[in-house]
Amino acid sequence: MKNAAALSGELVTGSVTGATASADLSTRDRVTQLLLERGATTAAQLGSALGLSPAAIRRHLDAMLADGDVVAREQAVRGSRGRGRPAKVFVLTEAARVRCGTHHYDNMATAALRWIARTGGAEAVAAFAAEQVAALEARCRAAMEDADDAPLARAEALAGALTAEGYAANASTIASGGQLCQHHCPVAHVAAEFPQLCEAETAVISRLVGTHVQRLATIAHGDGVCTTHIPAQSGSTVTTVRTDR
Image (cartoon, rainbow, N blue to C red; front, side, top):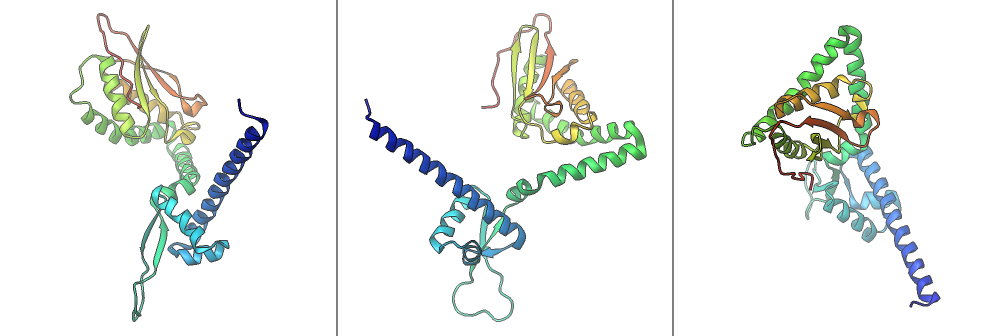
């Protein structure tokens, strides 16, 4: 058994490691904010603004490069160019920018749908929602070309197609048939106010699996997962395949 001193040492080490990780995350957030405000910036400029040594800022930038949050490029030089290679500047990737301002997109989408609802009514919102999911339906249908005609088998193929679209979906067999679960919803905040988006998506699922389906839960309404029930077909059997792994 470990003595008290050893256990105390492990606890201290764990606390230091956790504190270091937290500090690193906080510093990266500050780097991200500076790059968002200033655009292309050199490591020296970032280090100076944050009060970090060249080695420290380089460590954070290397980690952000590895995570795909920033890219490095040569600094554009106007006029005559001096000796030596141009300084390297760092800029946020599009993925990092989206994470910084996702709520702005949600707010704009919600405002746009409110305007559509005021000027065109609920039917106009439904038509807009149907048009928005049409492209998704086309891509999923193409990905399901080789799927079996049985609804539950098609649900498994659809889960794979939706996972490729970022929905983290899986299909499984249950006593009353099957169910399709989506663990991520890219429009959850907007759909919370405009259920027409969920209804249009449910209609797409029904058409793609080839039978009537029923939505049992949605992330937009506060549930942890979007769950769609697929009724059992007489005489049908299907092997359950997890497609979210």
